[in-house]
Length: 195
Image 1 (cartoon, helix red, strand yellow):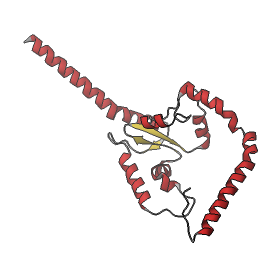
Image 2 (image 1 turned 90 degrees about the horizontal axis):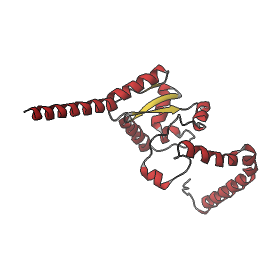
Image 3 (image 1 turned 90 degrees about the vertical axis):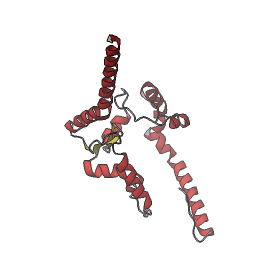
Image 4 (image 1 turned 180 degrees about the vertical axis):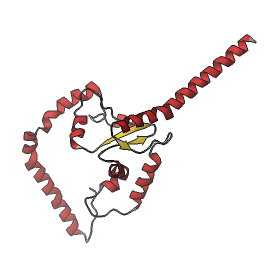
């Protein structure tokens, strides 16, 4: 009888620990993170249990892609309507939810520069799909010391003087491409070019 009570008590304790851990990860922690972000003056959408903003994201993408694209330079509402809407409603520094994780949206160039130049590892990149990691192993997928080392190696290629030296090559390449497009357009009454 004592063994049965001990096993039952242990199972109840394990079950309560599991429920506590689950409720912390799917409700308490996201709500706490939301409160911390709002205390820092960062506005955003309210947390929805488990799904975050995924339903709204899918709805806006489907709606934007169902309409024909207009011939204008305002492509952001078409390409990323969710982020565009979030920035319009909550400002250039805002947040949204990817499941139970908040995602910070930064549209301020100076802060973007600070995040991208971060060498201490304070800013983490969102988790990537393992398939992406297999297909590409560039600087965008690296973290920490590996990222810092790789960035140091490629940084000299992007100095202003080197880029200025490449302008004639850029110009020739663009000119050749435009000539090819003109030839395609004149040889046919209309043509479609995949850019």
